[in-house]
Amino acid sequence: MSGHSSFESNNAIVKWIEYRLPIFSFIHSSAVVYPTPKNLNYWWNMGSLAGVMLVLQIVTGIILAMHYTPHADLAFASTEHIMRDVNYGWLLRYMHANGGSMFFIVVYIHILRGMYYGSYKAPREILWWMGIIIFILMMATAFMGYVLPWGQMSFWGATVITSLFSAVPIVGDSIVTFLWGGYSVDQPTLNRFYSLHYLMPFVIFGVVFVHLWALHHHGSNNPLGIDRKGPQDSIPFHPYYTVKDLYGMGVFGTIFAVVLFFAPNYMGHPDNYIPANPLVTPAHIVPEWYFLPFYAILRAIPDKLFGVVAMFGSLLILFVLPWLDTSKVRSARFRPVYKMLFWAFFIDCLVLGYIGGKPPEGIFIVAGRLATALYFLFFLVLPFIGWFERPKKLPDSISTAVLDSGGGGAPDGAAAKAEDRG
Amino acid sequence: MADSTGGDGHDPSRRDFLYVAAGGLGVVGVAGAVWPMIDQMNPSQDVLALSSIEVDLSGIEEGQSITVSWRGKPVFIRHRTAAEISEAADVSMADLPDPESDAARAEKPEWLILVGVCTHLGCVPLGQQGEYNGWFCPCHGSHYDTSGRIRKGPAPLNLPVPDYVYLDDNNIKIG
Image 1 (tube, one colour):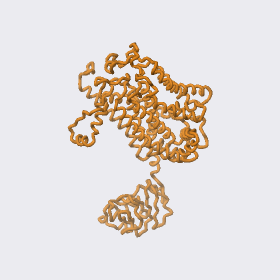
Image 2 (spheres, rainbow over the protein chains, first blue to last red):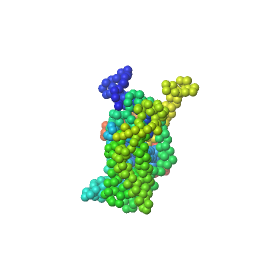
Image 3 (cartoon, each protein chain N blue to C red):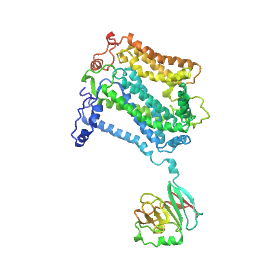
Image 4 (cartoon, chains in turn red, brown):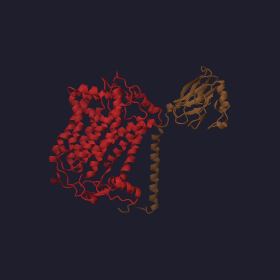
């Protein structure tokens, strides 16, 4: 939907460059006049916020790399050197560590928004895939980054997560030895994790570009989930959404700053301020909070191989979501059954996250298995919902819906008609 | 929709003020956020803490030199001979590209203390070599005399004398 550009300039230098590299018209068509649905709500702020967080992580990460030493004997000390000696090192490291968490919060909301409003449906399946690839790359990047301070949680997290691959039949142990570059997590592991942790964000950046390319081809979905039918349904990206995004960034930045300055270790684990000791495991190993739901699924299955399969499956199943969801109606606003199912799924994810942070004993084992079953049940019943659910009547266009209800709300009470279901 | 400012917001200068105030605050905020990212490249606290050293001179015989490391750079400490001292003192200021008296460069004439970094492009000169029996830089051929002053070659300035104090007769503190 970036479409043709109406860009014109009288500046000779701009014209000279534009003739050779049409960068000004590209920016103009994709970020200024770019037609955007006029009814986007604040849940649509998360995309640009995620982009900002990616850039912030790259910038602070490059800075930390100037002071960090990727060596088993020096990594922990160099991290403390950053905290104590480097000018503003404490700020930059806390910004990077908490920035990772804030990035995941934004991305989780972004994914859930896509699920609620059916943004993964045709013609945005590849856009959705790129998003999942970014998410998986983020998890790999975050995991390897957490290893770098070389504290106890770093070391044992690295040991546990790399050992997941030992569940692979026959070649499992060889894979783990390969990942470690030795017989245990040690200097070779740390050094390669450092190298890859530096590389991955740039890979993510590339996939983000493809993500945006796909996005701009058909344009954003919207809270109504219906296609735009003409220019009356769109407004230019600038100034309307640049201002809205900036306002959202201000609110988000305030929350970030509160965490950064008043609770910088709230989302961390105190054991990671103990230098790595390959001979002693901490009493209670937990990953960072953003991995907890998946960690709970891993522990819920009382079989090594199937636990690992279930954990990776819980991620990979997102790839087929566009086909598991058989309804042609995108937005949950018009899908009463899906809406309930979505919120049940959301609560289930929170429950899984809670259980993932608890020791695997007593009631938590039973609850973890139940919540894991419900997680997959969501994807199992989804195809059938599309068949029997009777969606509410969709508005004729974005424009009429926005003008009629004054806020873009769903026309509640409208008689459900069967014509819109798939 | 065309004019939704409402109320008494008809004065265009009010909107201009808001633009400038918001933009100005934004610039201050961004500058404040960027400064830590720049300042982190300045020397860290542990580097600053190591920026002075103490040296014991008692073991250096007349005619001997030692090289010590200070702030990552070589510092030459030379116990000069009487001949070198008189040679350095007798030079006419007119012959010096960077005029400086030997007395101003050595608090006690027998002890010459120099930062051993050529003022041309940063190489370490070799001691007791060159046409003036002082230091000679092998990189681009700068000759320094027995007071470490530039006499010939591309270097523009004398070898610098670091700040130092005598703690007692045999100990100095550099930096």
